[in-house]
Image 1: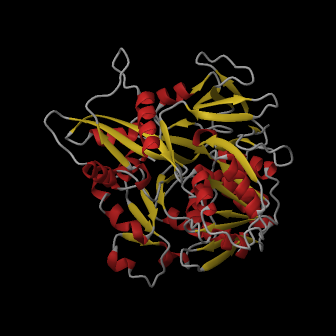
Image 2: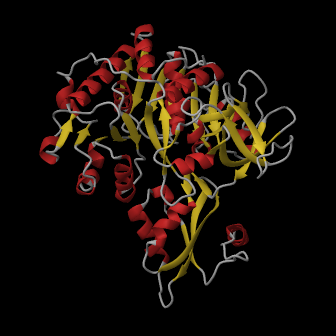
Image 3: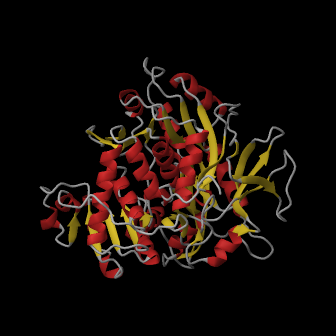
Length: 530
């Protein structure tokens, strides 16, 4: 028996509601500074009310339900309510547009959507194209909001909550049943759906709480979005598993961040390079070092001087880590009670083995760069697979090892060091952007003959997206036309910041575009112009 046992997410939520009934579980601050609090017992009661409403409206075990919400308590109510009835949550990025959401809804065959007023117009416009969707549940609004007049077809949760039952019928849930699917950018033109299970969530809660030494007195501040594995498995699950308090901000604000840390007495938090740099760019204050942050879980390398500046200025420690959706978030982590090496992704977590291999799968000795591969149990300590894509699953998990597409090396102390991405990915503000997905959208433009998308350095957001385009013979096109085309079909962070038109691309002997040469040329031109 492993440390997960037979527990599912429903078991975790109900156990914590018994153990910490009157303890503060959620502190939520919205964008206007309003604060609302829930105890563990109140969280469980709201989850149960959501669950019984969903059941009453026909949502059942195995159904797929798209959740499109900003960070909020309602996000957790929806996630855990779906978990309690055995339905599958499909979290979607709130920056996604109609083009992307149509794909997610159709691919997942979602039977319902849970969203908030700001997104209702977009979803109602998609209903004709997504016949599987039977209901839209509208949350984050009160019964007094004129939602029925504006959206007569929506089911307003606030209208039903008061009379909703607070006991959820028993549902048979195996912990390797799907909990949610996360759409992740990859090397194909459309995102793949990563199947994550109840056991995956339970596992991340246990190992995260143990590794970061989380105790009930901790107060974890989450500003990264809940529709990502970082927010779900690095912030939420370890915090709840330990019976600690989750402080939630509706949106990240660099100018408010340290005030919020002090006001809500945060002891831990999770950041990425872009958010960290934005915080550092705020004017220094005398109070910067006066906070209770004992640890900052942190991902994506930053310059050494920025690392030192952040730790010194804010009187805390950065704990670097590495992971991906397929490996359940934090997979290598610096030991908080050992040596924390700067810009080093740390050591393997319990229950997983990690090695660095060459292109033939042969393990490499310390110091040599190769691909990170992770050994674990699919559906328990690794993703179950890619939904409805056995070929991609088999190509990613080979002989029990998940091939990550990330390059690294191991040092003599057994610590791993990230080098670069083997696959064609761009990292922008902590978001993965698949070059192939942006290329696919641009290739649909009637004036475009061929396109290559690359990442170029950005001082704040890590990388910017650049599109290099060969036009159809006789066509002319403005850069803004391509940007506007992408903005209609892609989330904002995927839209190219730079567009250039080329006569041709450097190619291999068999005609393959040499993106490495293109990137080198563009970076050199950018550097020479600065």
